[in-house]
Amino acid sequence: MTSENLPVVVIAGRPNVGKSTLFNRLVGRRQAIVSDMPGVTRDRKEGEALLRGRRVRLIDTAGLEEAAPDTLYGRMRASSESAVAMADLVLFCIDARSGITPADAHFASWLRRQNRPVLLIANKAEGQAGTNAALEAYSLGLGTPLALSAEHGEGIADLMGEIAERLPPAEKTRRREAPKAEGEDGEDERPAGPLRLAIIGRPNAGKSTLLNCLLGEERMITGPEAGLTRDSITVELHDEQGPIQLVDTAGMRKRARVEQHLEKMSVSASIEALKMAEVVVLVIDATLGVHEQDLQIGRLIEREGRACVIALNKWDAVEDRNATKKAILDRLEISLAQVRGIPVVTFSALTGAGVHRLLPAVRNVYEIWNSRVSTGELNRWFEDALERHQPPLVDGRRLKLRYMTQVKARPPTFLLFGTRAEQLPDSYKRYLVNGLRETFHMPGVPVRLQLRGTK
Ligand code: GDP
Ligand code: GDP
Image (cartoon, rainbow, N blue to C red; front, side, top):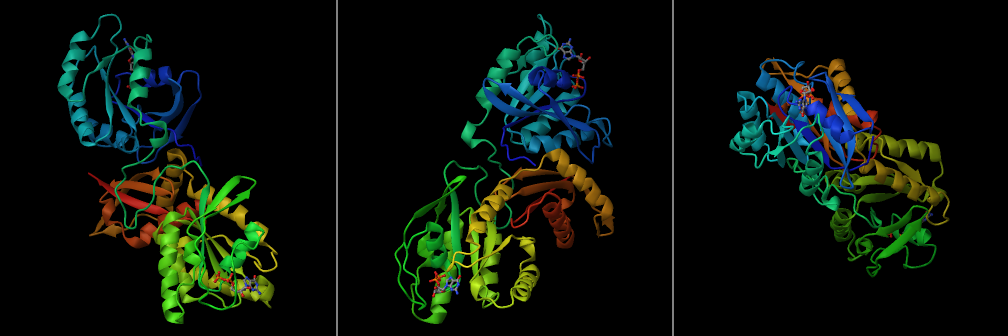
């Protein structure tokens, strides 16, 4: 798993134009990471390159063609599709010595439809060779071709400059234009600055007491009676890893006096708070067990795609701790299945016992929420998952699922490619999502799976 958000540069083109040669030239002596990708089964090479001071992740699609089925065009497309889908820039290579072939033209027309930035490269143009083909390459509609020789190292410095110019600005990298899924949320980048945390829960669960405990001082007024008015304040906590900003503490205000109204208010205030947050601590009064409203908030957290830690408060007042914990965990497991394995911390905000475990749990789930799984690891797992349970038949035909790629983090979002993938039944989606969550250790974070049909 990696949380590195390097821009992705993909080298594509028909076989034999010099993609691997170019890859090696750009990666230099840096170690290439070789990862296999099922559906096409051949290795896909990935490496890191340093271009004008920018680190990029370089992907070579060469060699994938041979193992894929059907026609040459089909093979080229299948091999490049997943890589191109996550590319910040595609280096489309042609062979300037052989000129534009029908395969180049076909590939180019497909590539134009993918709406990814493309840099056209006329390779094997050492000396004056291939000038004609380079000119001819304008006809591909992919802009001005850059003539170079990967083998002889001519034009490589220019290429690096051209690539660096086309990369998204450093802080914008990896903002994916993945198809928006239901309840799609949030940005993909990890912003600088403090982790944004919301502490939410039903009235009287102990949120203010917890906050006071975390702050180590009586910053807020707490009291047993519902309906106490509090002011909105912005507070920042610090732990060993730096600042944590508590968002929308106004959401904790008790704005109404009528019990029913109060509960409604508290949920809508929670929605506001959790939209602004990255991690949400859901505080539950353990002496009362799990209330329907707790589950409602839990589902909201999942719908908004936030990372979550469940805090069982008032642990000092719980008599049979084992039985209580089991009852609560069972209830959560059944009713909040979508956030399986969610971290649960027990403590007493009043005495402070156990509260020190909360922020480490928050940091941990935040890391998971931000994490990325490499395409290689992902597809090794995916291949196994398909073997264990074949995709179901739909209208008497078996769905052919090809490969997966993680298109974004915050929360982890995966794109699954396959023939008629959109028709995948929910049960099989759940199977895959649960498998992803378990295999790549993503408890407590919502995992999104998007489907993309291929022909
Ligand atoms: P791929 O199938 O697209 O990955 O192509 P390769 O990198 O394996 O290269 C195919 C062939 O073209 C090899 O024989 C390379 O040595 C040759 N080649 C690659 N780049 C150049 C170049 O700049 N000039 C010449 N003349 N040959 C090249
Ligand atoms: P909020 O409405 O969620 O902000 O809840 P408060 O922090 O105002 O707490 C509600 C009541 O629960 C107060 O009387 C607190 O003293 C009490 N309380 C909070 N935390 C604990 C705890 O850990 N143990 C016990 N026994 N009481 C607590």
